[in-house]
Image 1 (cartoon, chains in turn purple, yellow):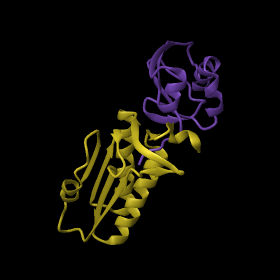
Image 2 (tube, rainbow over the protein chains, first blue to last red):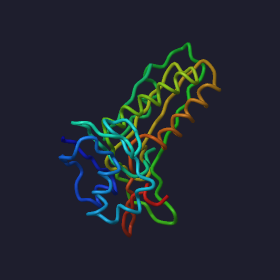
Image 3 (cartoon, rainbow over the protein chains, first blue to last red):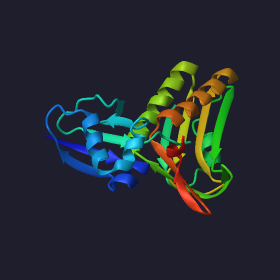
Image 4 (cartoon, each protein chain N blue to C red):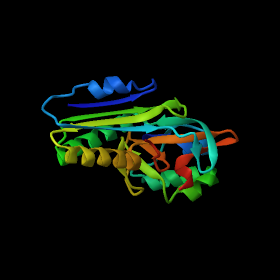
Length: 81
Length: 138
């Protein structure tokens, strides 16, 4: 199935893209996508503990199971205001 | 009334203060956040605000709805800048109104505190000697 991954702020800088469509196996968890990103971008590993996840613009955790067409956003703690 | 904006343009504070004001409310609170020219002993030249636009708008709306319900606000306006904001410029304004002051202090504080926890906006501070994403240093 296809899912879209969006990265923001330092995560985008580290991985070198802001949006990418991935073809993944059914019932994949967000954490598995994060692990794939960490494999090719080791600097991301130290940020895994504090990273925030949103699926289809709603916050969720790394255990969230993805569905076809979902948009997963991964980002560091927010700093607006 | 509730109005939420995320904009690149300078914030017109006077226009926001007047927008939708009602004579049935006895208290208005405006929280105005501005970019400082210094941060942790470094000279700040500008801040780049990055946003996740759709989600930021949705979270701001949820926060406003929560504050309206919790504090009984009659007016709630939130405007947040994105893009390049320079020292002294307004990065955010929150205007809330209610019949009495207690409600407005409470509602205004709730909104800014929740924005700092939940709204997907990130600051990259630029200094005379480099730059840094602020979310990465905590």
